[in-house]
Length: 338
Image (cartoon, rainbow, N blue to C red; front, side):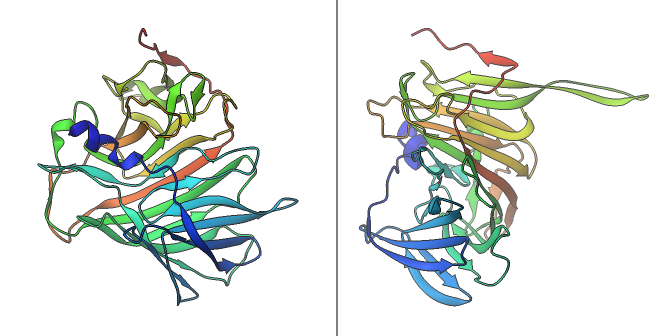
């Protein structure tokens, strides 16, 4: 049961569509609303210039690249997944999820999803696209203060900055029994497929960790940091038996080669609150489609109980997709024997 719940949030790979509607276009950015085929799927309510523009199971954000034209750079599903896209020859890769947690006696609660977005046609079309909205996990957490800022896209990098406050919509109990595995409150996650070294969307996890910290009354504190990488080859279960605190904001799920397909490297910058440790879980899989790798940062200061309507915290993350590349690593986790 625990294994099924652990990966339940990472099994959405595609969102079939029935019809598309042009909702917003300022010459640089445009938004398309997609009506899905599942009538039970959660939808995103859209307003443009404070006027209702319908509700859609998926939104596709496009950026007008010079010489290329309007090109999808972000897919947002009402079920929760956010997929950042690069222009061809890149192909769609893994997805991002926002906050989720383990509930006492209930297991893993689904990640919060975007339920409302509001666009403004006025303003400088060349500036970052600023959007407001709301979030919910349709059970226990919600936010009415979501702010998104889509940076002007580049052909090799796309980014979105997200800020939101989470409040409990009922009394909740966070299961802290997963502390040793750093799996209590996942601030944001990345999901992708890894079948083998020859067939994968992403193949390496990288973060910066604090190696040592020494303080004295004369010169202050001196911190040594190093990059730590872990190849996904032969891995299963939790990736890190012992996880170190993030010594920098970025946790990345790299695609180190442009083969077997040019799927992007994914990264999350965890900017607030403070205090995170990274973790990943790799589940067995027999196909090259199902996302079976989930990478996240665990929030160390989460409390065990929150009363209804009480604020958990303000969260600030940046989601990035960029061209595949092989990173430098100060230390690499040795892959287990096959």
